[in-house]
Each structure stands twice: as C-alpha cells, then as structure tokens.
Length: 353
Image (cartoon, rainbow, N blue to C red; front, side, top):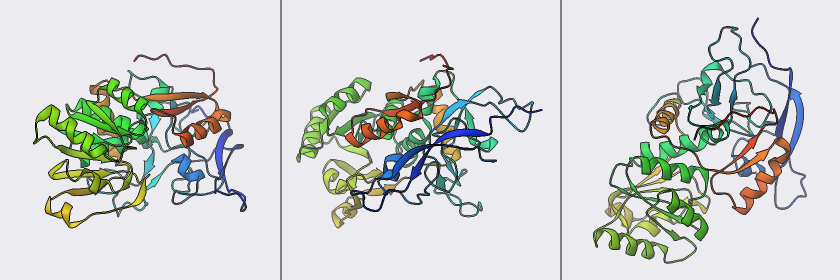
C-alpha cells in the first residue's frame, strides 16, 4: 500500500478584492481544503494575466515526497523541488504549440490549478526534480522560478560568456541576483543598477564589478566612465539583462556594443519599450524572455550544482500565517533576494552550504 498524505491541507488562496477598494489589491486568505487528486504580488494587484479567484498562491516549492501511487517509488522520502510551470518541455525557442496544453505558471491561476503555498501539494511525478545536496530546503525553494527565468534570460538568450561585460538592472530581486550569480559563474564581468546604494554594495560583495544608482538620470554616463576606466575608451557592454522595460534601449544605446543584446524578462518600469532607428543602425537586438522550458530548468540546476551556487534568501518567514509580512516586504522593495515561507512541520533539513 503506497503512503498517502492527509485528505486536507491548509492553503493560502487569492480572494477577489471588494469593488470599492482603491487601489485594487486582492486578499490572501488561509483556507482548509481538500487536497486535489492530481508572481504573487502582481496577482494581488490585479496586474497578472489569468488570475483565478479561489486558487492557491505560489510557484516555488521544495520539500520531501511523502506519498506516491507506487509504494516502491524511489522518490519517497526524498527531497525535491517542483517545476514552476507547465506546457514547455524542451523547445529551444518557445513553448511547444502541439503539446495539447498551453503554457502556464503555478500559483494564483487555473493553468495549472496548482499553488505551492500549502501544507501539501499533489503534482505529476515528472514535474519534480531532486534537490541539490549542497542546499537546504529554504535555499532550494528560492531556486525554481527565479533560477529558470535567470538562466533563460542570461545564458540562453543573452548568451553570457567568459570575459564579457554584462549589465543587470534592478539588482536585489531574486531573478536579477540569480542572473548575477550565473553570469559570474560563466566568467563575465557583471555591472548592476539599483535604486538602493545598500543593494549595490551587497551585489558587489557577491562579485559584481561595479554598480550605479538608476535614480540618477545620468546613470548611463556614470557607467560609461566606469567602463572606460576599466577597459579604455572602447569598453562597452555586451549584453543587458533587464526587468524594467520602458526606455532601456535609449538608456544603454551609447554603452551597448554594436550587435549587443538586451534581454527583457519583466516590465516593472513601463509596459512599453521604445525601439528606434538608432538601435536598428547599431544592430542592437531586443529579446523578450519569459520563464523557460523543463529542459532549461534541468540544465540550469545541473549548472548550479556544478558551480555550487547558493540562491540569495532575503527573509525566512515562519508558516502560512506570516505570508502577509512577505507581501509587505515586496511592496516596500526591502528584500535582497527571495522571501521564503518555511512550513510549520517541525522538521528541519540541515544546511550544507
């Protein structure tokens, strides 16, 4: 007889905001619910597509397999993390159109109808990956969505390589920090921007070459001077990994080499990007990058293990009831790295970092 989990689980679910609440901000409520048989802050602001009210929050999750349909399953009692998306297997370009399922990300929606902010999560067996031995569960939980997005943006699309100059904007968020760590492991010289001098200092402590504050209007000029001081007048950026959108092409035009890549994985500054004839004449390439494939995640995890990369965790919150504190941290932008909820099961896996 295969081991089976309890019939019920607590889950943090998204509930529709009252119509008169301004600005719009959906509720996060802990509910007791039956375990089913088979980008959180943006969801609460109503700025994420495909929100399904009553669905469970959370795309990232790590823990121990406690039940399987096969009592001899070798994954039983093994540490694993969940793949944070469905509908993209191995295509190098984009989700496969003929898989029979559309691309979707876990948490807050109906495709798939799964979220990780719960005591127990039931998923398909082929949608878990063994956790790396050098990480505890807290740091593993900080990896899947951010690691996949960063890998796809930095390694697959920006094609970061040894000796290149790479600019990562908005350092402090989980994806940007993982892009920094992956790029450093590739041997690149990484420059960063942030609106916080403290976050720039922390990024340099992780290995960034230098950083500039994007609140200064002349930050591209400041970065140009840093590049010149390091490599002479001809020193330029090879690739930009950006989360803001907006006028990023105009801002980096002078410091981006001809044929350079700008990879955008988010648009927190502005949902439109201006692309002019000036960029065309310089052969600049603008590439959109969203998540990645199952194969990308496996490749990224193997690389992370080979280079002993440890995801940066900003805060560890205890139990689902502390989730609101995490939302407030994100709203204020106080975090440097991922915010992780540690479930209240009394079991701690020792860290080997």
